[in-house]
Image (cartoon, rainbow, N blue to C red; front, side, top):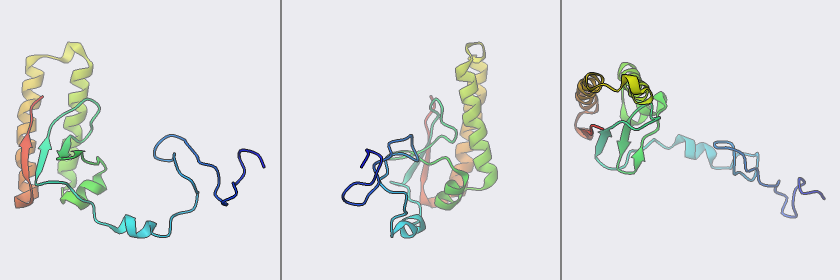
Length: 139
């Protein structure tokens, strides 16, 4: 038996590739995989923070950290509209662009992005209703 063959327990050797395809023991789906996928997405706590961080496309956070950025998750978990998700994504991308280019880091650029973020926070609160409190945290 080579190191690439199945072991005595019948399991293939571990694959330690890059996320999300790494660190698994079997190519077969676990018996309860459909149940796990069917669970509704959750948000921890009652507060959603809108705050930018480098490399973040959709800058929404709960008490445990950055929320998933996938539009389907944001729609299903938070009930956000496609236009709001697109605007949040655009804002995150523009913040990255300003931060990445020293020549664009002007007070005016940051002021404009800050005004847009405050408006996005109000829209986010409107769409979330009373389920969550939205807090905007300027950089």
